[in-house]
Length: 605
Image 1 (cartoon, rainbow, N blue to C red):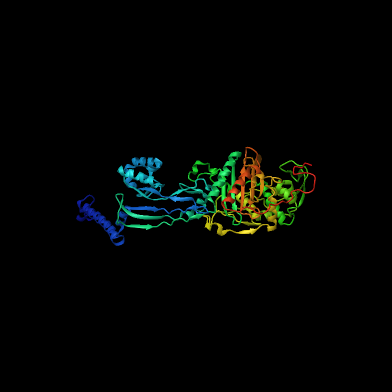
Image 2 (cartoon, rainbow, N blue to C red; image 1 turned 30 degrees about the vertical axis):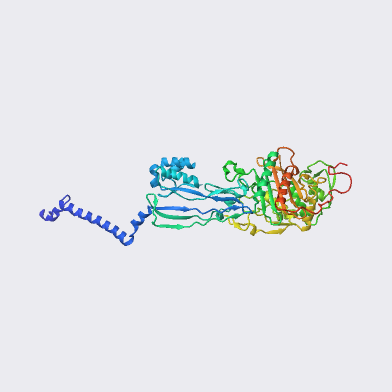
């Protein structure tokens, strides 16, 4: 029985560890390896015959960006405010440059004023997002400096660097209209039209791919190119010379008055085009980092304030249009006016006055304005102010514009209206306000302000430009004419508050403004003032509306007529001369400002 279960000779020959078993296993392993090689060979030959060739080729491909030429930003006469100049980029193949990266980084950093650590990281191939054979070392560098640096690198025996066109942005006008134009940062546009119209200006980059060997392009190697699409120019309505002058005059006035800041705007009466939009302080677009961030925007759109007595132009024009008063309406103006929640005063001390409506404007009487405005129906003034454009953005194409603050109809009451009548409890941006006054200059028709000629679409999808201009009537031509004649009494040295705004040979119409400024820290009035002057000329056939605002003047006499008025006079005079506007050949208004007997404007018998 034991013999019947004993292993056969064959089993004894294949037992574990026997030479026959080891040979059999070896043959099986060889067969498996050969089958794997065979399968891979079949894959390469039958299904992917070019895989190895493509992989090898890919390692020798260089990918090059072909930057688009950025569109220019031009003034109304084609003068450049922002343009592009010759520049170069430097790229590198880290598989070549890494062997001498520290030395090459030192050379490039010194020649091009680059950050050494960043440059070294790129040359070593450690830059985030870089391809194995292609990294950016420097972008948008002056062509002459790049050529000098690359020549020095080649002379030192360093290879693996490449250059390509990469236009650089220049701002030949420096600080002129910088608040409108904006500027580019290292990561793209940061302000102004450069930012809001970036898609139009930037165009679309192209790219090129080609073979290299040992850091050198193979002349007959494979290559492909997608050409760049250059950006489109933007033509503004800004007059570079007038803008320059407005900025300089405004700067001098702000320095003289030790003011916090100032604004000056020139608008074409008929077209609504903005010829100058000056903010002070401003910045040099070629070196924005040298100025505080607060000075790199457009205060004329982004910051709001209470307009003060310039608002009376809107209040009383609306009242005339509504048929409640005329320019000769007679008012008895007491020394002060006790209302529901406060006492309203005038800016000067007086007894009881007998003023016409023209006298209310000429003397800038808060009390007279409120008494006249009592004749409005419920909500009537609010409707007019909306039509003048208050509480709404002008949408001229610059980012960050504030709509201002026009109290809602649910908030509106007699106390609020009393203050709004003469320009408090309502906030505006300067472009809103000049466009509202311009409606009176334009015969009662408000026309949209514009800073872009033609048509453009912002990156946010908003259509802007003169091709998109709309207009609508706010007050009748009769009301606008009466207001114009009333405003002519303001520069009159016998009757008005701003004799310094007269322009020899021209009829001018204007209005002073003085308002308390709200301190954002305490949300209270702290004694500082916003003073302003708005007006148009020639009064009988208006060509330009000019508006000047000076915030927190702290030196000398402070008031709309003495602080902002002289700035207005200089800018308007320059504009009239520059555009060859003929002197006026008609007689200025001589509307009566007082009625009856008993006192002069100071209330003296």
